[in-house]
Amino acid sequence: MRISTASAGSSRPGSRTGGASTVVLAIAAFTIVTTEFLIIGLLPAIARDLGVSIAAAGQLVTAFALVVMVFGPVLTAWLSHRERRGLFVSILGVFAVSNAVAALAPNVWILAIGRIVPALALPVFWGTASDTAARLAGPDRAGKAVSTVYLGISAAMLFGIPIGTLASGSLGWRGAFWLLAGLSALAGLILRFAMPPQEMPSRSSLRTQAAILKDGCFVANVLLSALIFTANFTAYTYLADILERLAGVPAGHVGWWLMGFGAVGLIGNGLGGRWLDRSPLVITGIFTLVLAVGLVLTMALAQTLPGLLCGLVLWGIANTALYPICQVRVMRAAPHAQALAGTLNVSAANAGIGLGAVAGGVTITHVGQGGLGYVAAAIAVLALAAMPIVRRMRRTAA
Image (cartoon, rainbow, N blue to C red; front, side, top):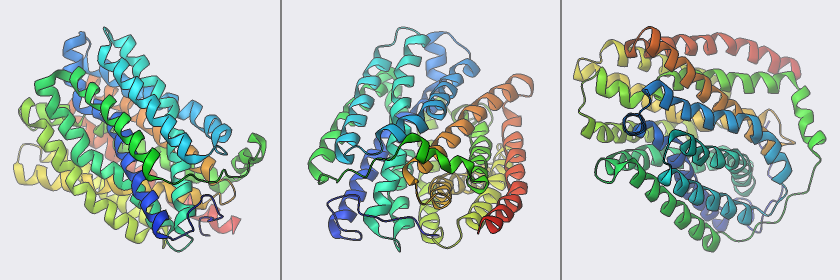
């Protein structure tokens, strides 16, 4: 079943203008993902400066993810009929102000507020941006268009997060948040003038859109995404700490390692975009297996450079590939409410991010950093074991 491509904007599906709009959305995605995940590279510095433990600082990731999970579906259902260009510009404005608040935060509680507010807007962006890109591209290119938007994730991991982490070495973590505030404002201006106005989609009631929750196959796909992201973020939340403590990477060099991690992620994004229009569930299984192998190798061979690099390459490829793959897989399971379906997948992913941060914190407390990859890989194996169930439910629904 293909993603619906009913007219959603002034650009014809598959047109050059539609392609340009998709690229602009990727730029916005870069800004939003950098804001969401930059804190992973800043956790050690934030913990030292604000006088909290690394596990406690890691709960800033949990708080962000939980807000996305709880409020994302309702806000998206409420706002999905709004004119998309104006909606996207408003979201980037929220990110600009919130990053400024984070930069000024005198304690961890104000910093948490600066993180929670953009968490309200993030799922609205991902649900409506994925839907808009798919509609503009047309049915034969929908998966590739969504993957193009998600290229912003790869770019954020390649440039945004590592450069922000490196900049924090000279500007401090507060300076990194000021840079994000300026970047968010600039991205909003680019989107305002580069994307043509989009026609407002027809409005559906929350009850009508929420009917997809009665579909067991759809719910199973959403839960699968949550499990996969729990596996990934059990370790990824603490990647900077893993590199420092286990691999012995100097704190000033961690940003370069994160940049390399993001660079190999471009491979994952390309592979995912090429293959996911065929069988998203099968591709999900392949990259989840790659994720598990990469996590185990990273932990087992952290003290040897070739082994560490091999593990991080596999992990980085799977990490980035699974974002668009999971998004398209869930959206295809609910063709009549794709904006809400996309947001529910984002909420599930953030539930996984939050649970992963908690699981990682518990692992560090009771086992140590050396157990993170093994616990994460075990959760990935659980996700693999669940996939035949999802496949059977899909066949029954068909």
